[in-house]
Length: 257
Image (cartoon, rainbow, N blue to C red):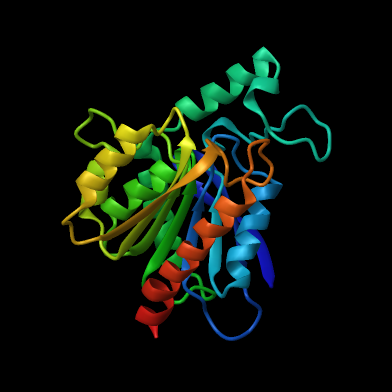
């Protein structure tokens, strides 16, 4: 595979973007990976590589760029699983500030710039685009699918947070404008997406133009799909990716053929 990193100029700074795609065989359909609250790190790079290995050009933006080069880990011990509760209070506070300072509108604006950059990227096949997001990034995947239905034809939200709000621009309402498919993976034990949120998402997306499918993983907790989290659930994650890759193939590979 071929990997590269570039910096996309934005009004509030330069956004670091990691790109990985298959070597040879021509341009590949693009999939944008939206980070969780922990931000840009090695685990996300590895997930991007896995997506690329399946035949896609995976694009991972560092959406915390407005705050500089933000990198978080659970202490600094190699191999230690990430757990928010294990962080020192000052690091918890810093992480919350970074997360709370990233609005959905900012991500939508950054995504517009990314889509423009993808149109000029010779490694990217022109046509439908995919989105996969974790935690806050799951919410962002729903938002961009609804804001750019002409581009995003496949969107996945894994243990998403803030997906249903009272705001007129709530992600679950924006997602009603989406086209193609949306998949949501939920944890049974997730205080950020309790059963009523799962139900409201289903109600909002039922009968819309977009095809919506979802799964609640028994016994899983919030953060289950991240290999570097202490709540990682390999079986649930594999089930999600089976659904996601099938969706990407239908919407990006078959439609672009």
